[in-house]
Length: 264
Image (cartoon, rainbow, N blue to C red; front, top):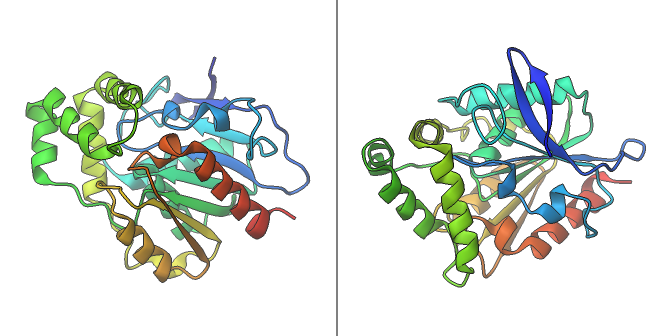
């Protein structure tokens, strides 16, 4: 069952693992990518399951117009970032470790560039400072939706990933619908923070997958090289949805980063 909080004239849906923060320890907030929802993050992180992240408070949100959230999908990453900032404000969350996947990584980086005071660090998961989108994808999402989704799914997962993960990922994109998915990919196509990276003063974890065909690992590594306080980690045996394909390794990377850079 999801919780909901009002942000302006609509509500955002979110999950919470029930862990209360210790002192000024970090609070994890997870932001999904294009056409996604909070289910694009492992239940082992979002729920009460034991694991390397179990000691950290963890929230996962559905962006406006996605999943169980109200509102409508947006056509810029900036607009989504404003919605996430409003969520942090509404719940009065501080010392936030904002982890974003793909488009969500762009949202996290946007808030870090803006110097959002509620953030203590961010994670860029399968993301970069610029997200390239083929015009054929944008056209296909409008005129040949399911076939284009099939193409996106084909390139989003590692060849050895079980088919159940692929089918669930496809199902979520189809349920989001052509307008939402197109809006998100359009937002990604116009997102570029390459010339503003010097504004990021907080620690950044850049987590990539060596077999990612959507956002190649070398683009993520190049981003890390341009940030003041970045840690770069690349995982093998996974694709664009590395947090689902390699949940344990990704979670341990999060935990190691938080323990070293943030938690005291």
